[in-house]
Length: 466
Image (cartoon, rainbow, N blue to C red; front, side, top):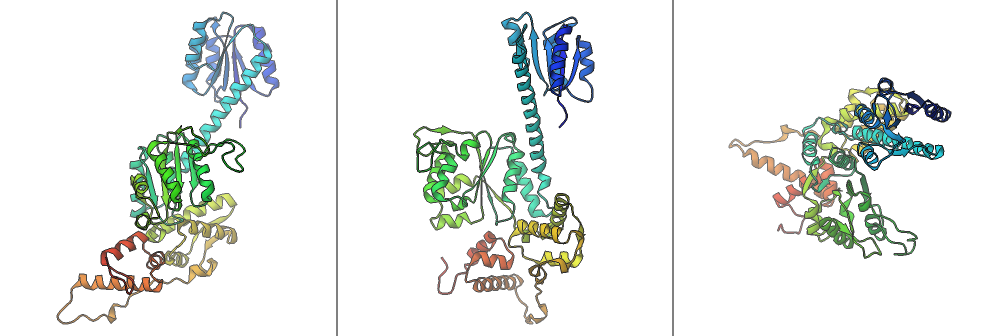
């Protein structure tokens, strides 16, 4: 980071000299002026002024007016106003115009140096926060969600529509499809972008600790609670809380979460005091909450509270045209991060990866590219470079030559429907009626398969369709 620059604007030569010597010894880039016009020229160089120490009464004008001008060209500049004739009105005026502090002459040099240090630290933190926000915005802009397929473009269009609102969003999709990336994109493209984004995985924390993680606790509330602690909801105040794997939430906590969503308030564990927060809620799950509600594992009222705006993230096998784009995207990232030089992928290797069902979705693809970046290092990825399981998948072909069409003709829609029924039944029988595994075999989204089963009235042997 560059050396911080300080401007001293005062018509007292001895004061300018004394401050210059002290600040120069601290390694700061110090410039001095005794008139406003000279200070304006010095302030418009390539290096911006981080802090200006300005006398209120100058030979050619008013120090507060100069401060207003200086902040118009660089709003982040901190200003300390000095004056030998302080009044309450001038102090209020300086503060209202954005002065960091107002100091009366004569002043204690040590106290002024402490104030200067605080102002420069504040300026540095502002720069770092601005840089961080810029990086976050860059990282989570829509173009970081890679894909040109219609499936992912539909998701992007929905994100654009919902980002500006405060409505609760329920992101659904298989593990590894990028649900948290979607949630972050919504947050960092919303009016809450400068507020915190607080994620919590509801399935990764033991049930007995999760309530404390969500809502905080008071000292002595339970064994090990040695101090007060705020929870994720309170951390997210003014921003967004992301409740990942919400379908794994225990029934007792579902009730407390429902109240927190309804009231936007809660009581920390061991407290009778209600804490109110202003948060946006984005939840995500890889299970079918409709089924969980039907089976009594998830509260219906909580489901409807969460499912205000549903957003389904497609599995990678449903957007295979995006695989080449994702491969290039991850190659660029890992080439840069690991100092490697992968240049692309051979056509037959790309065909093998396109035919692979990707049960781990984008996360699995990212891990594969990272592995190839390290092991291959340079050049183009060939089929021989791929782990065995990625090379053995062959596209299924159907032999239309064995199909007999009677002379009297046949109903096309009925034949297609019958063929689809047989395919689904074979997949279900092969997996013991495990819908997740059957959907993976058929490379369908699980919810799509469940809808087809219900619509067609397909049931396991011995059961009767409802």
